[in-house]
Length: 135
Image 1 (cartoon, helix red, strand yellow):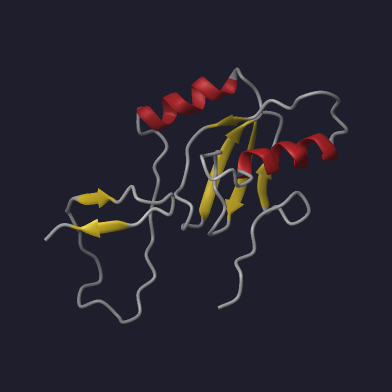
Image 2 (image 1 turned 45 degrees about the horizontal axis):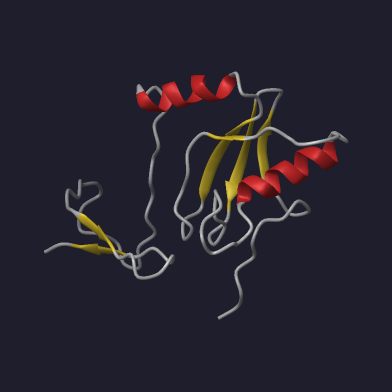
């Protein structure tokens, strides 16, 4: 199996950017924030991108609004100012911003739509997150 392509400042997939936010397409394998693995987080990659793009001296502010697990892909919103970060956080808390999760399946499901309600158990032996459906 080929190695996964991780994001760096040269291949970063920026989907939207203005003075306040930047929206990134997170690749599978990217970690949004740093952890004990020491792997370079997407937040650091985005800071490097902003620093280079705008020739910013010193440190770049970047607030993490939400996260996605390492194995998943999807859109991640970062705040470019400390003023907008609590406002975006409040939108997630109030559910004015909704996350939609899609799953790719091998075979066509019996139903066009349905809801799965179940418990997930996190296995903490490694930093590679795995989930088990409790039966």
